[in-house]
Image 1: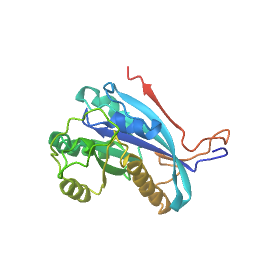
Image 2 (image 1 turned 90 degrees about the vertical axis):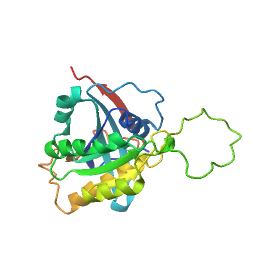
Image 3 (image 1 turned 180 degrees about the horizontal axis):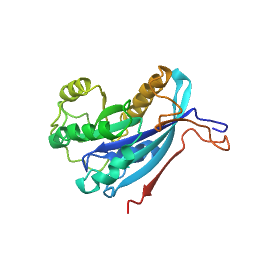
Image 4 (image 1 turned 120 degrees about the vertical axis):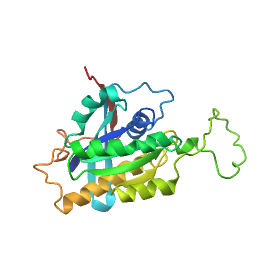
Length: 231
């Protein structure tokens, strides 16, 4: 799709405990694939993607920083929070501890990111949840077996917590792709709405920039990821 220009560049951060699937969500967004055994993120990793918000007539470029979820990298990852306009706060629906720790991650983000930051709470790994009803008849196409786990965080509890803390909310699966694009699109819509209302200033908000590609020849489905050295 040639001749596409984007209207805004939005800085996103992806944060949460180690092992909740942050890197897998980013790779699913940018490359539309699933990493079975991803290496732990050391410091930060970067990915970008063009997405279209048709009802607002905008194309935005997401610049996403996937941050490490371990305490040893906390001082490094905090520096990438600065100026972020959007945040995916990720927990694992089969790990109650990761949900409880989301409170600390949210405090950290709100302390260091743009004060008008849009944050969406993402309950990842719904594909691992034990079904509440018998599964459908097996497909003739066989797939590798998945070890199911009991859900430890209900949709209702997470949704209520998100409302209390002024967060958007969605449950997703990096493995199947369920609601991954939706999470980024919902957050982007909210940021664009804030831009229209004058909450974000294009000239003073580092996480929101008016921009056009240099050659005006960009594919809308363009996505890329690259590791960023932290040493």
